[in-house]
Amino acid sequence: MADPALLARLAQHRALGTAPASEHAWLAEHGVLRAFALGDVVVRKGEAVTSLQIMLTGHLVIRVDRGAGSHKIFEWRAGDVGGLMPYSRGASPPADAVAEASTELLEIAREQFPELIRECPVVTATLVHAMVDRARTFTSGDHRDEKLISLGKLAAGLAHELNNPASAAVRSAKALTEGLDSAEAAARRLGAARLSDAQLSAVDAVRELCLRSGAPLVYTAVARADREDAFAAWLAAHGATERCAVPLAETGLTLDALDTLAATLSHDALDAALQSIAAVCQVRTLASHIETSASRISALVGAVRGFTFMDHAPIPEPVDIRRGIADTLTMLGAKARAKSVEVSVQLATDLPRVHGVGAELNQVWMNIIDNALDAVAVGGRVEVTASEAPGRVVVRIVDDGPGIPAAIQARIFDPFFTTKGVGKGTGLGLDIVRRLVQQHEGEIEVESRPGHTEFRVSLPAEGGRISPR
Image (tube, rainbow, N blue to C red):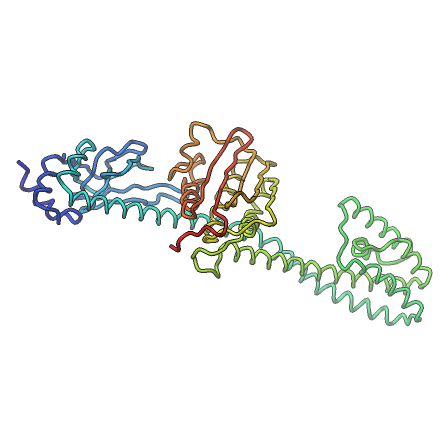
């Protein structure tokens, strides 16, 4: 005979209260009441959940530390149902389930489920709906968390990438003001020298030789130092200002050309001419640096726009895999350089497009390539290739890291499973990757041994279609 008080509590239960009284009676007769005090562990991390838990009072919480402090990922309160559900595959919690208030629940053991399904159809339907809602909540929640983590990585990488060209542009802009002042002063001195047409032509010839390349020439550090020393020695020997040596040495100017100019001009006129030429070269060089830095910043902003698909609605459309991978590698460029990782990219030029959501596919490449960069040692190698197979586009990402131990390879796509230390990995990245690939009707495989870990993502080429979500 069921306890009338328990029956009354089940009739008031938020999730199961609308079930028939006969089903409440079955639950009361076959369940076990359990009570937990504040701080008690109801289910421990890694332990299999073996019963349905009908919350009567209290509050249960599962918290996970993802590197920024403890974060609540699941909770149950009075009126909820938790634990193992009928028709579910069962799993172990990613962390301890702890009572955060005095808690009482009614447990139905797994062994009772066949009879529960047969005798309590309304309760069973309610539990199935609760299981689907829980899965949907978990999926959207961890997807959001992983997106925020990816956004943090993206922001950090972008800040690092933008800092160098932005700083270079600021430095060059400040130096440009000084360079213009020097150029004006040198021009006045050169005008005061009252050079003849032949002498002006000789000065123009040397200036043209300096500017002929259109941009500063690239010399090795040793070659640049040698040229600066040689130019400084020549200037000192001819009574000219030695500080002109640096800007002149960075051009294509030769000492023979300087000898020709020196034979044409007096000492004072030569110094004025060389200062004018050096100032003009320096201004052109600084302008070129600013242009290069601005172009780099523009390219990075374009890569961010391409990576995030910020001007696209999140609906399936033809996606250029090559562009997505290139934008992803741009975002991760700072991380690769920090570890001196050699990143090899081979993308077929005639690769067909994939019908999908570009931002989601870029998240796939971001997570896998980021993991590969984490896996390799300093000076390691990561290879990214994309090719066409019959009706498919296949992307391979290979690293020469230590590999994934065979004992855990089957678990790497499980939610919250990670081999990284606390704060370095959430255990959600590859789970998100697997789900996104599946949503695009694709397949993901992994093959790993020491020195060679390969992730293969196969997606339908354009022509196959996935439904809008």
